[in-house]
Image (cartoon, rainbow, N blue to C red; front, side, top):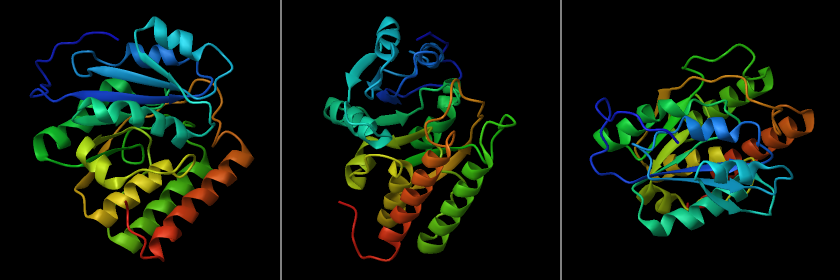
Length: 245
């Protein structure tokens, strides 16, 4: 991690942690960590999700806290990170992908609404931000449009993206009670925030082509599985009275 001046952005003593789920991202994790400001973030937690490469070793070189989750799944890795982070008293948790498609230096934009305007959840929207051509395949763009449309129809919350780059108040996470272990993680968080009436918003973020091949949108089976799980999660909560835990 590198240091930057805090003149532009001050934390007001808030304690920030970052959770990065990582599966075979040895070629990108170092760049992600290099772009996270240690002036802003107290601890960076990389969850090595059963990688077969040197992801963990590369993260350790840059002083990240490295956890191991042997169960495959994006949500499983995020849950492992939360299991470690939640008891430590952080005020805000930021989630960030390990493939260097997000821009970690834009983190202050996600934190400002929480720290200055008391929002509970802030989504970094690639749909309203600057997106490099080809960074999101057509199926991902359509899937995000459909999912956010359904969220608006069911719960009246206007999101434009299910982007992985997001910040959430720790107290809100306790209310939400995340459960999903794979493709439904991001949409579950947004649905439960809506059902609970939490204060949520979006900010535009930049998005570039990832390093390596996406395990989800980069393959047809991955895209189909992710799409099915996202729709299942929406309709599960949309047509039942099941309450977030």
